[in-house]
Length: 174
Image 1: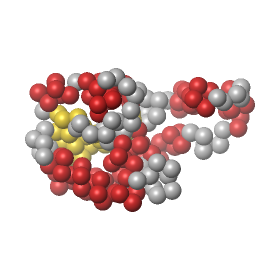
Image 2: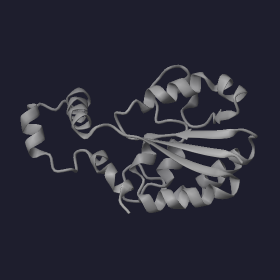
Image 3: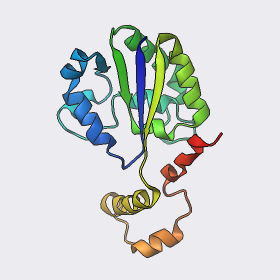
């Protein structure tokens, strides 16, 4: 039975480094029966550049319509495209994107159901201890968004909306 591994990398857990390694090891992975499909930003990852992974388009299709990166109107189209790609390889398949970690649990269930006829779907989550993740989020805001607040001010104002990844435990509640 074919395995369909979907890496749902939470932000700040090394997903980009993993995606680069998977892309750069594509030929070796094929020899061992795994296909890190050459879609999305595969070429950039193979060059060692940071990307959203080879599953970004599919993952974005399963984000809720109100999410700023959502491709929900293209969900059926992108699911069918991915379905054909999986069916077209004799290997187990690896798909990766941080956007999968932002997908609500019911929509991840829909994705798994849509692919279940092709093999065993496995969702793999990488998570980071919450205090380290919050600190890393602050540093990212300083670096990329020119945040000028001191850390104590940033953390005092934190209300959960600044870092939605902090709610990852919702995936593990019954």
